[in-house]
Image 1 (cartoon, rainbow, N blue to C red):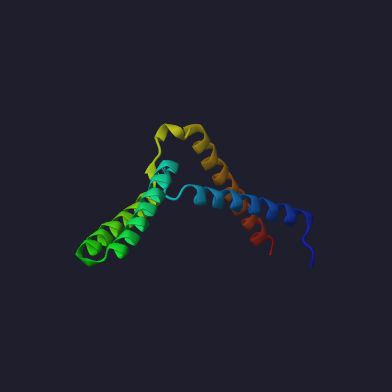
Image 2: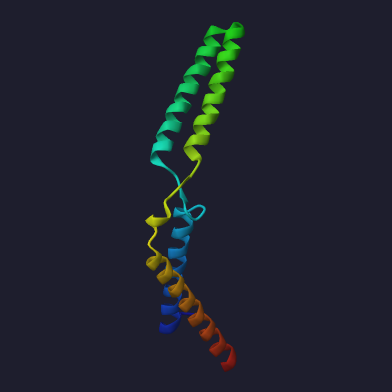
Length: 124
């Protein structure tokens, strides 16, 4: 059964709203925190140094090989932690006006949806 023109517009509006909100969730994992490109590069380099150290520890063998291997594993772990740890963005980077507009637009969208729901329920 095909949708009416009004229902199709409503569905399109809901899809746009969901896509907009999902993009916000993905791009901002925890509000004002984001991944740093510099930390990502340093973490990857530290990970590679740790892998090289682990290989060197296997080649050396003996007690020194174990010590080198443990230090290399710690370096690899530190590199991964550095790469995936988000950093705080300055609060001034987010203009207050745009945040206010987003809150108002989402509230008005929900108000419109509630009004439409009430009209449908009253009609049935």
